[in-house]
Length: 330
Image (cartoon, rainbow, N blue to C red; front, side, top):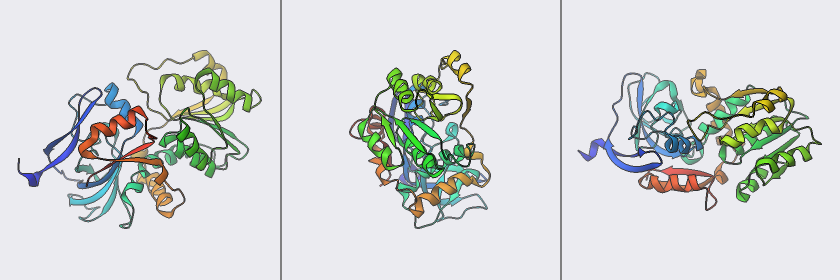
């Protein structure tokens, strides 16, 4: 292949196995732009998708799939909305996302123009923060006087800490067994932390709330136990947000009796990519660019696309202080 028309890209060759390969540049169709990826990051859902095959269509997967958190520069445009040289955030749907590659062809409906002065590594996190901003629009405008529990202190949980704090939550309690993530949570708004899991975490939350439970529970892990556990943490007629993508494509068993008795108001989160004007992503980008939130401490690792296998290993094993693993393209 001519070097001028090839690129490096992550290929999920089979369940649980990702490697970097050299492939042809993707074609750019009408209404699309070709973006030179300058920064990307691994989302927890990427790990779940690669390890379970959920929404992966087939293996080997499309080049660059399932990466969906990235920023870069438009190098070719077949869209009237964007020009060569524009700095952009790419926000594709996860079932057609190809951000783990030197270049990505993206529908212009899923591209947000950014200020040229942005820091690529930082603004890449506007994708996940924007999804949290989008979800939070379904919550009350003020959480004054409310006790909130955030299950998990990965990057998603940390963004929820920040968002709940901005909404005026009186008390934010985190559940996270990894001490470095717990410490980060306190810097983003957590008031009290619980470092145990399972039934012990439920008991701890009940102890901290006089046996009542939390007004709002955010499940930001996506594991089978924590998805069900959320209904043991919430008070009667409280609210539960199931934000985490399940770690398996199997059916997730719930303690239906507990869910039924809690009478909780529950919602999941999908569709931020289809919001008119990508408003929530724009708001997230502004929060990062303005310094309202410092995302630098969340980016624990920066690993080149040529070592995408190691990047997935670090993110999946959650060792060496891992929180958000960034992908570089130097």
